[in-house]
Amino acid sequence: MLPGQSFTVRSWDDTLLACRVSGNQRSRETILWVNGLFTTASYWAFLHRDLASDYRLVTFDLRGHGDSSSPSDPQNTGIHHLARDVEAIMDQLSTGRVHLAGFSLGVQVILEAYRMFPQRVLSLMAYLGPFENPLSGIFGLPIPESVWRVLLESMANRLPRLSSTTWHALFHLPLLHPLARLCGGTNASPGMMRPFYLHQRTLDVPNGLRMALGAMRHSARDVLPGISVPTLVLAGEKDKFTPAAVSNYMRDHIPGVTFLMIEGGTHTALIEYPGIVNRTTRSFLNEMHQT
Image 1 (tube, rainbow, N blue to C red):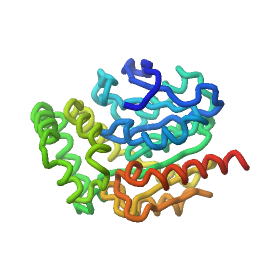
Image 2 (image 1 turned 90 degrees about the vertical axis):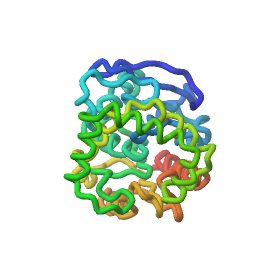
Image 3 (image 1 turned 120 degrees about the vertical axis):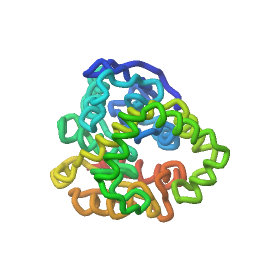
């Protein structure tokens, strides 16, 4: 868990969101970090350490993740619902404009947030995430969207108990990390991945699967060319979840974008290459102050 002060936000539909605020509480600038699907704030650890002296830093657990509650209405799991969670947190903190940073599915969330309330966004930082349907190119598998949809709907709505039991058991397997490395899912150390693995053992799996369905239905393709705030896109050359071609499309369609493709980086490049990630992020933020 990242350091900081914990607080709870009651979001727009009464879902309780577990949040933490850390860093420089006197700073006039806030960075709000949006996690990926099934993930924890542990992926932000190195960036937090580097930026804590200069920025107020806010993280939160997605609904149904970590210490946040699941929505009472299981349909409230779309990307626009998560963007409204971001807005609710900003309202409670009484922030003005914020830097929005997203990892993986969090990239879709910050792009949707920009669509919904662009006047409240200072910059966008998109790390290793897509602008639409995240399952379209996962692991390079040619699985039609219709097949993904039937599979996820069945697991979430018809077989929720079996899905949860199977998923939780999977993350108790002793060979899980070597298998993840073998299939190219990560090159991070077992210690850095441990918070993610532990989180999977208690996750509300049906809720997460519904979020995946919501992400499949979402697209911010139309948002990209209209972005007028400074934007950073960071990609991994060997990312099996957000293929390089997806990030390259964002590079080519966001005006004035700052872009970095990390050579050899997988979907966990945030914790594989913290040095280059931190330098690129700080340079991006510093350049904003000079313009």
